[in-house]
Length: 222
Image (cartoon, rainbow, N blue to C red):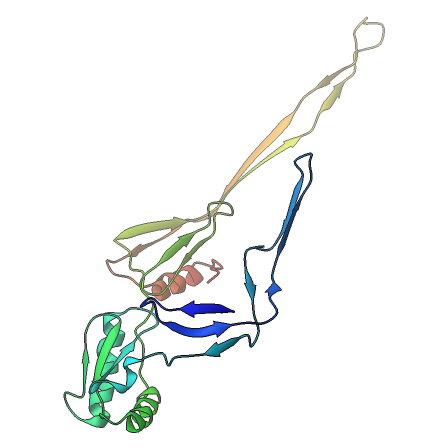
């Protein structure tokens, strides 16, 4: 029998049953060792008897605190506004970028229905924050639509240099005691396309950059 205690020292459950070990560890005298998963972790399925009810603040007070999965001031404010539009002014109030406080009924049963109604209110979350991800191994750069750029000028064109080797054979005249030699002859040719240049104004968006790149014949990958 193993008592399971909470932070307050009270016994909330008593565990007893067959332990299922999720890992193992074995070693030899020569120092060799093998470990599978974590040998110090296990579980007892259906092996605990509840001895005490765990207190919850849900049934206490006249308010509920909803926490956003991703902290964002804009989303928290929009959530409070959506609740107030349906349930009345001052029903919800954003506390910070994560939490929204909503006035709720005192009765626990009514709170469940109230919380279910709040969960089904549609809220338009804010766009993801501006972010740039650079893969140093492949050189790939990924940016989202929130990124804004400073004034910049971009030039695009191509320069092709072709070098052809056409060796020539030099044959001496008869009875001149000369030797046949190979004379190198190189043909160098340079081809340059007309360069294109465009200027980005301050605060230009990713979509505008993509559209400008397409006009130049580039193939951006988003």
